[in-house]
Length: 201
Length: 335
Image (tube, rainbow over the protein chains, first blue to last red):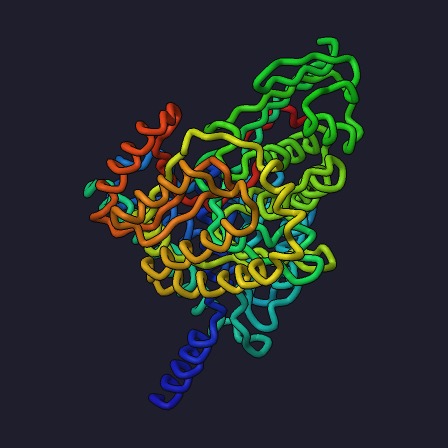
């Protein structure tokens, strides 16, 4: 049993060590730029990735500013797609499952916004549909993928791919969660530092 | 109405190597960063209001695009084949001629805004390429390509200008702490002297062949600047600015003058590690990197020189770096 556990941890560690730091930095810069222009950030994925998108939105919209919630007039505007469960079934039932993200995205999307697509395979048709819509609008795309990155990694501006063998969902999703938390922590520290410096000057 | 904004920029080292006379023989390279000062363009398509009105330092109304005196608005409209009645207004947070790339930010904002009115969505690269084409190929201005790219892309970047006209964009990935610490070590002053970049650059352009080695050595400073920046070695960055400034002064007689030299000396004498005139030179803004505890005495000294030389519009310009480039910030024409 302990061997099994150690083996899993070893694999996770190796993946963490090989993460593309530059691409994560690019993603952070994209989010910084989106904040400056008051743009919105759309996040989505299938299954566990959708849960992660929801989790990240809650952290990013609130926790980033948790030390000075009243001071920051401008906040992040991260939105999980779709925003309601009803929209998932409405689009899936009436139009087709491949439209559950792109359909609701069209309601909001504007130039100046940003997309974060989370997909282990990087090839889910419903993910790619939304990424194609974002491409049409020329908005930046942060691709959070696994395996070989698939189409998502090819199309993304920030190519965050956790490279593994096909089907390693657990390992990939675990690392995805670390990356998303890293991004949240970065901005939390940034706004704390900004606040400290404002107080000093 | 469509409102577009495009950031100005601070160019650290390598300026001048973005001129075709140089980069067609040897790749040019600059490192620069967008700042939180913007040029805004507002476009109001008004079919029932006769004519095309351009509002900038003056207001002109014409019946045909080709009659517009404002060469940038005219060329961008002609290039995009837009001839409908409309009003175009320009608003800038800083005066013209500050050496912060305002003219090219204006062209980038215009191209973004006018292409949006005809339903075209262009990305940063396309905006930069088109702004360069309009200014250099169509308007025949003797300028380089770095400002159009800096404004379109936003953020901290190294731009490499290749002989085949392609431009490589390498983002310099600074974390918030490094970025803000650099801001804290910077001082930027508007000298109050405005000049047209083209007057300095025309001479510089004819000098390229004899200054080739100087320009080549300036491209080499770019990677060193990046390395020291990532390390947070601000003193070394100041020294690199100083080296670059000495080289830059050799490029053309009008890059510096007596007043600029006095301002620069006052900054260095009072503790700045280094600095430079931003943009083509001859006036505009002067940048210093200095220890935090020397900033106040540099301010006082600069003020004194400005009074002595009666620089009425002399002022400090507080700046922060920004990541976002040219953007449509409001569009009420969406259907």
